[in-house]
Amino acid sequence: MSRALRLLGEHWYPPLFGVMVAAVWLLARTSAFMQPGGESALLADLCLTAPALYVLCYGRRQPLRATLIRALAIACAGVWLASWLIPAAEQRLLPQLAPLRWAGLAVVILFEIRLVVAATRIAFSGKATPRQVMEASDAPEWVARLMLLEARFWRGLWRVLRGRGKGRQ
Image (cartoon, rainbow, N blue to C red):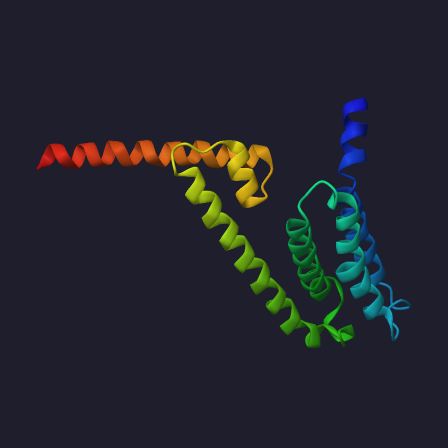
């Protein structure tokens, strides 16, 4: 029980975000709340409050760049979630925010591609440690270990395939 409470104390954002999305969904279904200003309140919750809470929860444990990129991704996901949660007839601001969401996602994708390429290069170098992969990708240690394991698998498979190819010639 104490381990679960400790984990919840360290990672309180995911359950809080789930409760937040459920509350937004319920509020979006009430006609009284969807009066003028209701959509902007829901968007503020999903696009401003949710990323801010993420930064509060994980900001000191992660590099600043990683935290801000993930907060931007959460804000973009907030626009997407709002487009599903707020009935189409009530959407007034969302159509104007769609281009911002795509621009934000493009930035997030570019950063993620850069991180994956850097981490993959290190992982396939043959002498990488989980710490090096973690630093290059801002990934947790267990992800870095999985990347190294996968790199070993692909290097081994490549050696086997190359060995068979030489035997046929």
